Length: 280
Image (cartoon, rainbow, N blue to C red; front, side, top):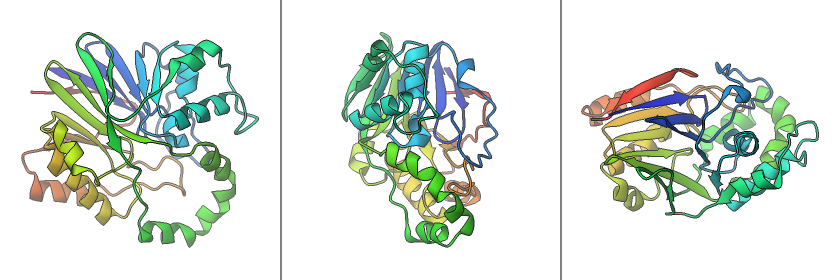
């Protein structure tokens, strides 16, 4: 079976399963000194059936309320993320950034909890998985504190950090035709016993960001070991808004996979390009 995935930078991607299209962590609003290769504008995105947010940070959530209004579709997220998205639409985070949001659109934004199953069609379900946000390691923190470029832009990013708190964090397992796609928006290696419930999975979409290369590989490796996927797709490794973010070197990850999981295929996606993925 073939599914289609369009990675839109950071952790956001569109999953197309026989024409049913699910949008995860929509973030098309790029801030500051964005170096993203993405050219797609949000009004060009159509025919989405549902949106899922892994957590409430701005680089995962800024555009979800827009789609709840413009496309009249459900958005599944935490209660905290719901409040932030509505505040963003109403200009309560940044006055210059607003968009219409009706009561109907607000009703479309539906808070969920861990281990809820959402039926998209009679063949496709999405289950929320218990997760946590990655804890930044000392090397990552120090590299930012002593970066003049980072310190210069910190003030401009504070409204986003304050206005979009993390809230409850989810992974998601999308199930269809005896296939399972497990995805996360932030690396969480702390619940291997939870992940094992979804093993083996056909595809694991893993975010590689938020730590030094060594720790990224170690934490992703724990998740891969627990999930036992056939295919892995890394996301969130691109340099979307430097110097807050940085492009992750994928070579240590590739070496780890070649050494420890040579039977697992890694697919590196091109930003903005729909890519067919064959699931055996």
